[in-house]
Image 1 (cartoon, rainbow, N blue to C red):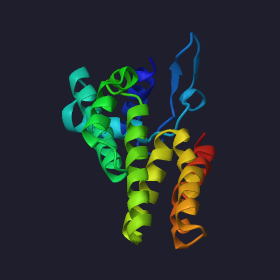
Image 2: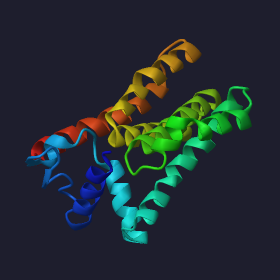
Image 3: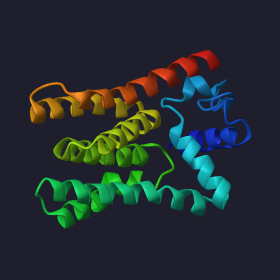
Length: 197
């Protein structure tokens, strides 16, 4: 039901890329600033603006563009299942046929995009800890930041992956630095949004 808000934000981003919520919208019978109506950071709207600039504003183009994050969710679920010794094909099939996933993955809202970034953040974090590779942990941190800038709920990855790392490593190590990336990204966004709106 919130698809129009994302489309309106994407149109605003195309004409004013640094003023993403700087317009008014009539959403519930009265005109109000978009900044007061937008419940999430604008990364999904930026993605939508990119899709529209490449393929146009048709309904087919916009929905097709949002199938890419849905595919990323399925592939990420496959990789995580394989990593933890579960049946990856079954995990992918259960994901792709879940009714809520089918409904949300065909919208142009931020939920499926956030889930794709979430799943791949977890995958790279788990792999980075297991193989002790800084680049995988850095990718996980960047994906966590993007996840948080897509939907605020993405920040719950920080305590989740902190606890996972503490249970795996039994002490705080250099890996903890990468958990600061999403925190710094969201704080920066909040400061910027406060200055703008």
